[in-house]
Amino acid sequence: MDHPAMTPRDRVEHAVDRAGEVMADKMAEIKPRLRGWLHAATAPIAGAAGIVLVAMSPTASTRIGSAAFALSALLVFTVSAIYHRGTWSPRTWAFLRRFDHANIFVLIAGTYTPYALLFLDGTARTTLLVVVWCAAVAGVVFRVFWTDAPRWLYTPMYIALGWAAVFFIPQFMEGADRFSSGVAVATLVLVAVGGVLYTLGGLVYGLKRPNPSPHWFGFHEVFHSFTVLAFAAHYIGVALATYSLR
View 1 (cartoon, rainbow, N blue to C red):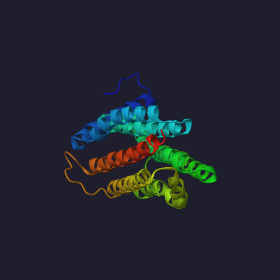
View 2: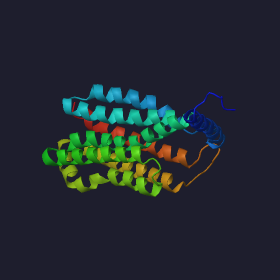
View 3: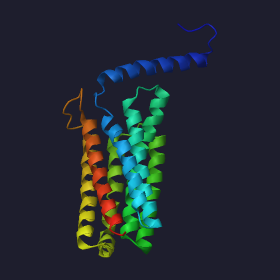
View 4: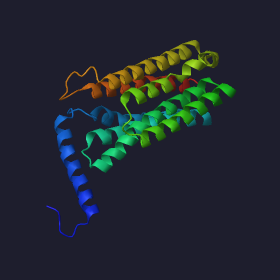
């Protein structure tokens, strides 16, 4: 029952908060029980691995690249874990959802950064970094201000930005000459593997299939599994190339 001293605005806010509580209760009932746990487990591992990567980086350039990669990954996994594990009010839920979706663009640009600094020089390096970071900023703005955009629209945007590197394949191949053949091949293969894994995860997210166990491990958990595996592939690739320069 409304308090007699409540203003119309207070009543509206109270109704919104109450509706949020009901919605949160219903979401808790249907949300898979493992929702968010993969990213919750990955976040501290990504943080620790990132510290090691930065500490072992031999130059200022590689440290910058490693830090951008590590911080973007830590941000994605941490916010995702908080968003997916908690039961939030509508306002907090909406804020975390914006943050969670926008961070994907940040991770894509953060992943490009060490590879561009390791393999590219001059105009190619500058062009790729400017393009991906400007696109990431635009993507962040897009997801923050259009939170209910359809999946069929924003999921391809993630995938398209993730594969922008295909336009720089000749430059990456040329830059591979600074590494031993084994390191160069392994690193570039891991880049491709990570890209494929992220793409598969994006398709699962967009199609909501497969959905193996809706009460425990649904399509979203499959999507999160692909993101963790993709991050691991890219991390190993960055580490191999970076440590080889020591």
